[in-house]
Image (cartoon, rainbow over all chains, first blue to last red; front, top):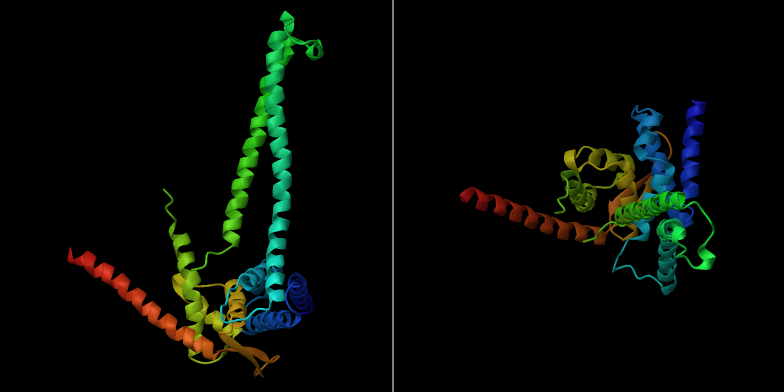
Length: 185
Length: 116
C-alpha cells in the first residue's frame, strides 16, 4: 500500500509542477479533481497503474490543461488588458520554445546542405579543369584530379541529403503545430 | 486529394459533441469528475478519455458555463461538484436547438437519397 501511495503522490507532485503556469487557485482545483478521480477509481476496484495510464503522463495531462485554458475564448468574460497581454506572452513563449530547435535545424541543415552542394560542384569541376591548367592560381592545390572528381559528387549527395532531412523535419513540425492548436468553429 | 480517414472525422465530430454532452449530463443535476467521466466513457464512438474531459471541465468553468462547489463524500475526502450556471443553461438550450437542426438536416439528406 505504501509503494502505491508514493506512486500516487509522485504523479500528483509532478502534475503540480507541470501546472506552475496556472493561477494557484485554479491549480489547486485541478489537483483536487485528479486526486478525487484516482481515489474514486481505486474505490471502484481499478488497479493504480491502469488509472494513471488512462490519465496519461502528468506532463501530457498538464499540457492538455494548458492548451484548453490558454486558448479559451469567451466574449462574456471581460479580460483586463494586463490579463490579455499575459496570455499573448504565454502563447508567444510556447511558440518561441518550439521554434528554437526549428531555427537550429534550419541553420545547421540549411548551411550544411547549401555549402556541401556548392563545394561538391566546385571540387568536381576543379577535378576536370586542374590537369589542363585552366584554374586560377589560388585554386591550384595539387590534389589528385581523380580523387576530386569522385569526392565532388559525394559532397553534393551529402548536401542534398541534408536538405531533404531539413524538409522532412519542417513537415513534421508543421503537422505537430496543426495538432497542437485545435480548430475552433 | 486530401481524404481524411474516419478516425480523423470522428475526432473532429467528438470535439464539438463532447462539450454538448457534458452540458447535457450536468443539465440533469450536479455531478463530480469520476461520475461525469464514467458516463462519457460509455458513449461508444464518441467516448472521451479523462485526459480530455477533465481539462474541458475547467475550460467550461473558466468560460462561465459551469460552477463548482465542495460536498462531503460518503468515503474519503470531500468532492468537487460541477453544475450548470445560468449562462450554462442558456448555452445548453442553444446547443440543443442547434443539435436538432443538424440531426434533421442529416435525416433530410438520407430521405432525399432514398427517394431517388
